[in-house]
Image (cartoon, rainbow, N blue to C red):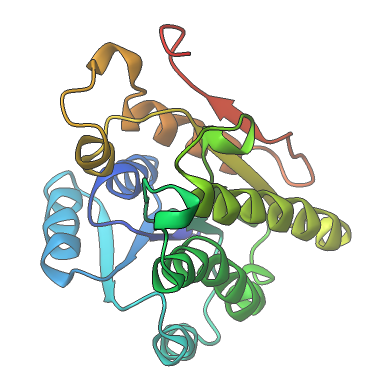
Length: 233
């Protein structure tokens, strides 16, 4: 049986790491993409210690040349799963958000997933059961003050997910967005120091949902998900 292959962006920590570990545990070869090479290698070592297979691709996801280089490196190979997990967060009111901060969030949270989906679509077309999973946020389902730039990027990602799902439906490429509520990640710790952990979703729970979705039979998809603690909100 041919081993399935997945690429996960933001795989060096948090949700990306958890997703990479879960897909590797399910028997997939995982490609770990992200900015910090040392973190990616640490995750690759974890996967290897568990008997899995991982490859590291250190790159800046906001750099078009780096994205094109990744696509060139993978040219001709089959890809079964693309997980767009890399992202950043900003807590700032509208008047306190600079153009540079807005551009950064839009490039990383929205533009990179768009460009990667386009560049890697030939690889996904080689799969018998391809999936694109975009990691969103609970802010796509409710309005929260002080995160307007972040919300714009994630709502844009939700729109992109729906459009791609419709566009690729005839090719049976599954495109789904998973939008967690606050998750227990380093990014959440930085944004909300001292937050009650009982309000947070464990990364492994989100990773398990990703694995369930990408394991659906060919031609079967599901609606987008929000996922949050019953104690939150």
